[in-house]
Image (cartoon, rainbow, N blue to C red; front, side):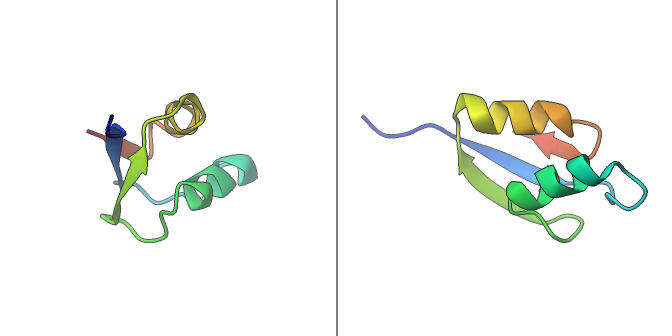
Length: 59
């Protein structure tokens, strides 16, 4: 069975956000605005996306 993935794109700068939220964005592998990563759809990744939902777009 193939693994499901989710595309995550950074749409807003994490400058001025909480330090923990900046670390979460880096943990998702996002460094630049409009950078997209395709990550495995796990509960941990879903939680990270939920934490910084105002900075990223998930598809």
